[in-house]
Amino acid sequence: MDWDKTGFKYQGLWVPVLAVLLLGACQSHPIPDSSPLLQFGGQVRQRHLYTDDAQETEAHLEIRADGTVAGAVHRSPESLLELKALKPGVIQILGVKTSRFLCQGPDGTLYGSLHFDPVACSFRELLLEDGYNVYQSETLGLPLRLPHHSSPYRDPAPRGPARFLPLPGFPPAPPEPPGIPAPEPPDVGSSDPLSMVGPSRGRSPSYTS
Image (cartoon, rainbow, N blue to C red; front, side):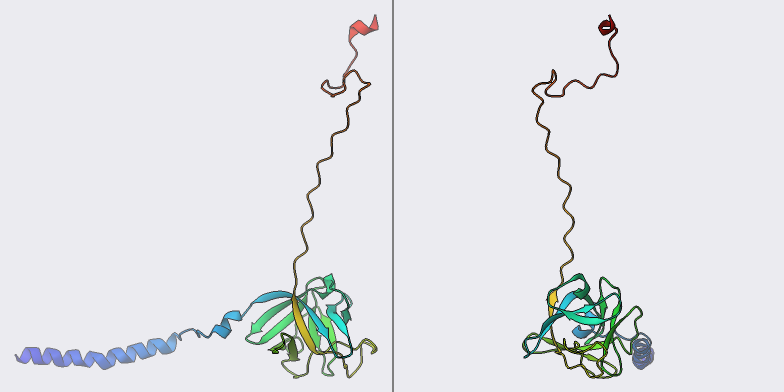
C-alpha cells in the first residue's frame, strides 16, 4: 500500500516538469502566424494603372526606358506593370518591358530605377470604396501622382491625378503558327500535270540517237 502511494506521488511530479518542457518547446519553435493577410506575401500581379480626374485627364502610367514616368492615353508595353507584395499592404511596382522600378523622390517626383531601393520604391496600397486605389510612399507618406500633362517632368510639386484603377494586364498573344502554303495549280500543258514523276537526273541514252 505504501508503495502505491509513493509511486503516485512521483507520478504527480511529472506534471509540472512536462509543462515546463512544453513551454520551452513552444518558445524555441514559435507557431507560424496564421493571419490570412500574411498569405499575400510575394504575390505578383500584372496590371495597367489607369487614372483620371475631374479635369478629364485619362492616362495609363508608363515607365519608359530612359527612366521617365509619364501617362499615355492608351495601354502600351511600357504601361504593363508588375505589382509584387513585399508585406501586407506594401508593394513594389516594376515596369515589365523596361525592368525599371517605380520610385519616388523626396519632392514627390516619380522616376524609374534599374535598382530597387526599399526607401524610395516601396508603396503602400490603399483600396477605395469606388474600386480605385491610392498608392503612398511607405517612407515619405506622399501620394503617387502622375505629372500633370502641362507640367515638365521635374515639376517639384506635381498636381496630377492620384487615384489609379488597376486594369488586368494580359500577356501578349503567342504568334500564330505559319500557315501551310496552298498547293500550286496543276500545269495542264505539262506531260506530268500532277508532278508525280520526279525531275530527271540525266538523259536516257535512247534519246541521244
